[in-house]
Length: 308
Image 1 (cartoon, rainbow, N blue to C red):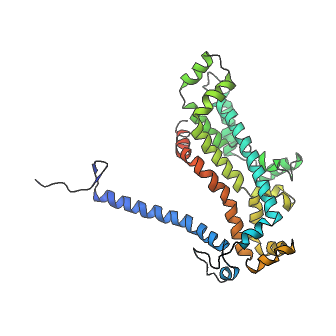
Image 2 (image 1 turned 120 degrees about the horizontal axis):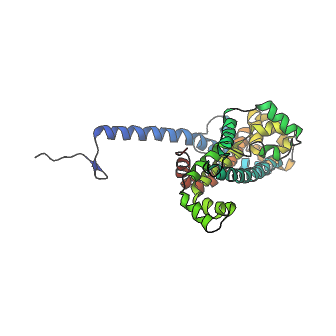
């Protein structure tokens, strides 16, 4: 009798078609990963390279004429530090407000119609806001006539409740066993105590996921800073970076006049190396936060979206 010589995977035989499929998948995913990673590596190499090598387009994936002049130049720039501070304040306030409103909205909407009779009405109100938007001009007029222009609240309040994130948390809460809240009610716990001590501890995966969504949204937003801030010193980091990417030479000329003590850096850096360093520094917070929340990301997103 002929022995079966097909390779095994977890005790199962793997056909040739399956092996080809896995190889093609691996190739495609590798190419996608490289397409995302290589530009970032090139940006990092440019930020650490000599300005002459950058101007000659000689820098690929490794720095040429390694130096840290661009980073020293940036850290001595009051404009960058000020914009970084605005973004940090905006992110801390925005994420905190987002999560408070998401939890306080999702919890009652996760109840049944018998427990919360107005649930369908409020659910439709929130869904309609996802489908129809008042537009840029009405939003700008509201921000202007409420006196929020040139304040941090103009960047925080207009998007204080992300309806999509709220629906994800709401669906996760609806998937929890009713016995949890019923047992808490029998023990005499009120709604807020049930939410704080019973529901939120078991919602960590979804809460971590929407926290990451909210963090990335606030940190990467630049357009609202451009339209709601009349003074450049109030720009968040991404709005500031957008202006120097569009017109880097103008920024570099202005920056050279800020302090004569920075003149020694001008021999080693130029607009391209400086901008590359600033763009790299802007991504560091995302890279620091994501590893801590990544383990919750997949489970929180899937479990919060499968049940309507």
